[in-house]
Every structure is written in structure tokens, then in C-alpha cells.
Length: 308
Image (tube, rainbow, N blue to C red):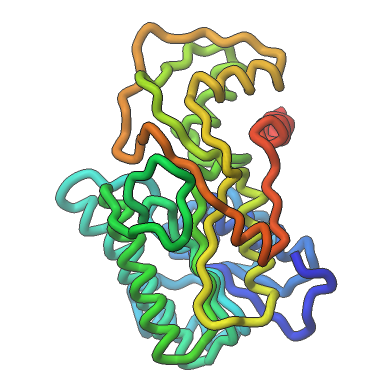
């Protein structure tokens, strides 16, 4: 992050109850940034300490969102608002588009009235097509999952709004984010819980790979982009540049924790985003943001330490 923090910054984190949003707000306040979160009345705020100010509004309620932003008048906004996971069928898909795309549009419309000085929008690597090489920001945007499609739609809305308002925008595309307080049914927390409590762990069949990036490194990139002077519309991949299978992840966790693992005879079913290759070319973030992600070993070690 930029040090010292520029004066007069007032940061609002939309989707601030989520895994990445909550960590962003907490880290911002620890750094001396005047930061608050925007959450819904129904949000699970267990990740948020009481010291983080909360503003309540549903982003799809345009009037309520406008009033919420008027009440604190942020200078900068981080948009982490999105539905979690991969939507299933029918109502889940409709809700996911509402909570990701329409919510983003609602937030941006409210930002017109302030106006804000800059927006950081959290997207996803799932906007890309499948690839056999490290993925670059200029590679084809042809998502193959429902979540990837709605993430790309939200990006499109952000770009259009930036063009209409001339507001600086940074779009971040993280790869497989893990770390403390991650959703419990994801692979890293499931694996570490299995090691801690000596539970069976179901391995994913096949040779799928992911680029695992620690949540605190993603947060560092978010806050760096929020604090730096705006430069139009910029896009950055966030990944380590190294891909790992689940079996390799298990080997790292065993080495870091010194624990054994009971592998279940029941394999874990593959999911829509599973790919034979999925790794970031994050050279742009490294060079322009001076961003350097930690290794998988370092990330698993710090995550395990926080679980104790």
C-alpha cells in the first residue's frame, strides 16, 4: 500500500461483509484509512469487528443506496459486492445476476451523485477463456461458467460508467483466493480443517490446476489501487504465476503443518471452474503496483497460524 495514506481519503467498501470485502475494510482501518462498509440487513457480519463502521442498504434499492452514500460521502469506493459461489439453476441464477450485476449498477448510479474520485472493482479470472499459457489481461474474455459471465457483465457496466463519468476505475481479476475466514466449504479451509481435526479429506479427481493467491495479497492490491492517483480504466490480474493441483496443495499443507491427512475413498466432484491449466500472468501488477504475492507455502503457513 501507499505510505503515508493521502489526506482526505474516505473509503467505502461495498460487499463489506464478504471474505475479501471484510478483510479490505479491516486492513484499511489498521492502516489509518477512514473506511466503512456497506452491507445488507441480511448480511452475515461475523467477519467484521465492531470497530468497522457499517452502512446498511441493498444495492438493488437505488434510493436507499443513494441515501447511504450521501450519508458518508466517500471519496473512493471498493466494489466487492457479488453473490458467492457458482449459481445453480432457476432462481439461483436470477439472484446471482441481481446481486452481482444489478447491484454493481446500483452502486455506480449512487456514485454519480457524490461524486467519487475513484472506484476499485473486484472482478474474477473467470472472465477469461480457457488457456494453456499464463493468462494476460489482454487475452480473450469468453467465460465458460455462469459466474464468469456475470462477472464480465459487471465489468462491462463499470467500464461504461467510467467512460460516461470520466471517473478513474481499476478492475482487479484475482485467481483462486484463499486465506483466513474463507468460505468453509472451499478447498483450503476444508483441507486445513481435515488436518486439524483428523477428518477424512476428499481429493478432486484428475489433474486440475489453480493459481492460489492469498487474500491479504489481494487486499494489498485493492488498497494500493484505491490510494494511487487515477489513470483512466486499468485492469490487473492478481495471481502468483504458479499453478498447483490439489495433490500438490496437500503436499504443501503437510510440509507446513507437520500434520498427516486421512484421504477419503470418496472423490470430490469436479466443479465448473476446474481447468487443466489456470495460472495468471501478473507481471503488470508487479511492475505498475510494485505488488509481490507470497508463495503458497507462506500463505498456507499464515492461514494455518490464524486457525490455531
